[in-house]
Length: 595
Ligand code: OXD
Ligand code: MN
Image (cartoon, rainbow, N blue to C red):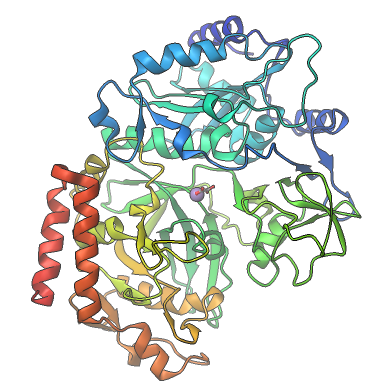
């Protein structure tokens, strides 16, 4: 039962604003989940997958206009534009709120309004935060049940007068009498708003039912609002995986890693190390909340309870642990349906089945030029399904190393370590991926920078974000803080990728962990510390000495170009607000190269 007065008042307010047909409070039981799932199947919204092949799993297919996060309709609404900064779309609250209130008016007509109390982070942990999502989407309710801790246990905490973050969501498709409910209701693009009000820690999302636009605990709360909260309260909300590593001497260490999309973040979070005696366990694959505790070490938690992963490319070859994770209790979105009611996506098997129903609901066979799954099709599965989930995944863990990465065919070595924490901030600020033909027709070879993999997720001014990292560095000593590394699995020569990647990345992780213990296994270069190949585990590795040399090469001429590119990027982005730390680090880099 809801007793928190603030919550009761808010629910009444939203009820009278949105006019739902009925209200359901999410209790978090499996029974409730199953009932709503069955109803969704009965109403033709979802397809129940073959219980023999994929127990307790659903397939949803979205409207073709509602298939991904929509950055151009995502807003940070602050009184002053400067507080949102140059990386965010901005509308002030006094303009945005009236516009959205008009949209929300009667928007839930004919629909059920779900009230979902949720905890980002383990229930009751001091590093966790509470929220309540009000939504008119059963799809959102089912997904939130997997992706967060939901239900009565959370409500009990909220009833104890705890603060909670208000998250309001509507698909923006009221059911006026006589109007048939489509299988995936949503609003046209110009009416979609994914809005954040960091001054009140509040989220209003209208018009989209998809992923990060609608599951408000994830990108909206755990990254955008949380990053803004964290900047005021000495913590960090980052787009990072968390991995537990045990070496062949049974020594346990934890790392986090930030990678832009399509760089294998979920694969690394579920890596099977090829190194004998090494073990890797998963704590999180997308978001890490971190703080420096009294012992001077930085600790991390995964605020999520599930995986919302990209399906295409996932296979028993690329990520067997993900495949096991999604073998049951999973919601699939926008993948193809097989004739025996299982799922298929590009890359799952070498050959596509002869016949499929594509994500648009049409018959598909191999003669069709189109692909049967959407490139951003997804799976939603609980963490507890993951065979490599660490048993202490609900406790804050001390982080020894932070990895930044990207897809850089040239320039950036396989791995390098920053000289210190502030130099590590510089590495985070320049990360990005080279634009390839697959992404863009022009601009090939240019670098799309994605600082800290947070470009779409920093909920405030990016200059202040960088300075906040500097402040975090002052909370402890370089000795105790995580060591910072830049990894690049994607370096190429004329014959293709130089590094085999996947499980072999454990060799890089081994070198990194040795560095965190101060082992003399490195060579110093102007950009940072790179592996001394005589002290890098190459045992049983099928990569030639020449290729290994190439993988760790730091070429002065190429770096001259890189520095020019960084200077351009900094001046375009930060204009006159370039944080001192970045200016100093860039000057130091030039000095080390003697440019
Ligand atoms: C995600 C993303 O969905 O980063 O995790 O876009
Ligand atoms: Mn992500």
